[in-house]
View 1 (tube, helix red, strand yellow):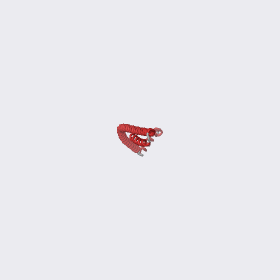
View 2 (cartoon, helix red, strand yellow):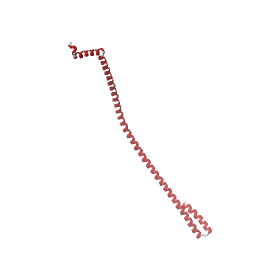
View 3 (cartoon, one colour):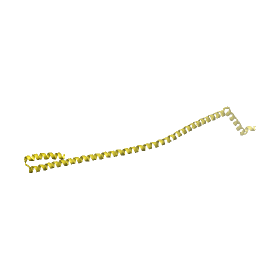
View 4 (cartoon, one colour):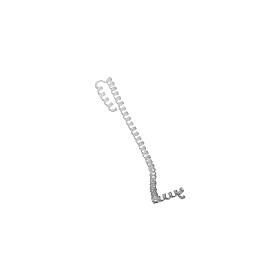
Length: 163
């Protein structure tokens, strides 16, 4: 009975009982099933990750293509904007030149009108002075009937010549 007093014997007996209980409770099957479920979950996660990776790569390719197209479109927009700006600048320059030409012509017309008005005014003043001088001369040198006749003739001839 020395074997019963030995502590290692009791450890071995406890171990055998423990293993027996573990087998009886089907712990290895439960552990295998849990490991299988865990492996299946990990496989599903890996499959989902692979699917997400493929989607990300497709989105990246689409983004790169869109970026490439956007660069081309941006270049086209810049070229078009430059062309429009040049056309607008040319039109504005032409409009400015036309407006300046119109203003110059309007100024020339005003100057010509002012000159015509000044000439007419000078003629009018000259005619009035000539008429006044003629009246003075005729009044001092001629008699009444001759005065009236000469004054009438002179006034009508001066008025027609100056106008």
